[in-house]
Length: 510
Image (cartoon, rainbow, N blue to C red; front, side):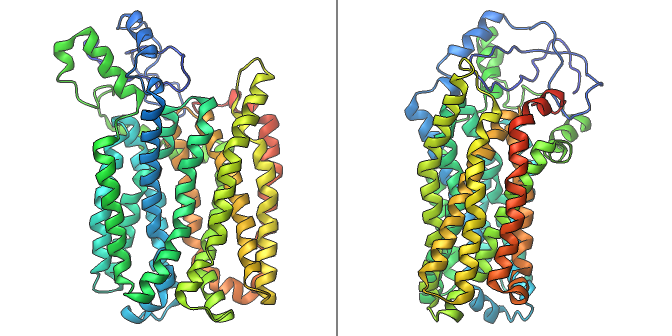
């Protein structure tokens, strides 16, 4: 919200829905706004409007890229966001070996070696998402991925528990770059009607990776030792960088548009234009406005808070599986560590089924509802699939809990976890689509939600063993399912009918 001389180019508002026309502007600071917003107030454009209009149809605009180029970028970002959360759970089957190696006696400390990743994984986007809205997405993604390689190697050679916890924290911090920018990249590339399939590919990564992790980690820990889990992680992350560095291009429209306009307005000056030149001066107020935006949205928007809370609760339950399921099958069913890791496939199958069916259903339903309003889509049209998914979540938890409690055939808890996974993915996809459609600053809104869910993903495993020891698998999962039902049914219905009115009254850049 800082002023600037008339001789300098300034920030460009994000372009979320083509063919909406935006122009380069400069102005005095607007001190009347209560929500952090670095965008300049409306004044006459300083660039020929014809040039601004030409940008909307120019091939350099990410919305106008070919389908191949768009999906290539979406696939690379999805690969990044798949690789980073592998670290969150791949070591779960090897917790007993870690306990023996480092002499850990406290069960909470042992669980923290797994879940501290999620603590920093949730904090990182609070800084990295605003950075991507200031300088662009590309290098935030690349740098975070490269640092993850180094920190995973640090975990492999950690001499004691403190060092292991520190490097696990740093791996989560650097790995969070993918989730800080990934959903916003999908928003940069695809319009509303095309967005569901791409978002489903992106959303699947953070959910499938923690499932794939224990399956691979179980056999790695069993055969060659838990230390090699981190070598595998470093290698997979390196492969992702080899693919991403040469092929992933910048997608953030304000950065690209400013360069494009400046090149046509004054080609000589455009050659020296830095990536962040579209921003006002880096005053402390300006930086604070950017970095505080995710927390501001979470604390001042009812929509952002309640949907984030529902996602966070399900994510916390999801990570309870990683501290309890392995023990259930090794102790209760007497499976080996590697075979117990295979039991996570129920969650993966549920996620895959929801991805294949949910993306198509979300797109078809959104287009149907939009066509009923003369083709004009609204964010609330993303909500109805949540009604379905919110019913599968408690059903899956009841099924899993009571079949595990009764020690029936091993396939029954797997089926229950699959039903839960289907419901979880069926709700995650429309919630993230709703936030991208509803909030102008998509990266900040998604980062606020991700912070909430990562904090519960971090904290739930810390008490999971004691929780189920006190209540048992049956009553413990029944209690979790009842709370999920309370959060997942009435509030989405309320947002579906009242969301537009809430957004209309809000000053939070919807």
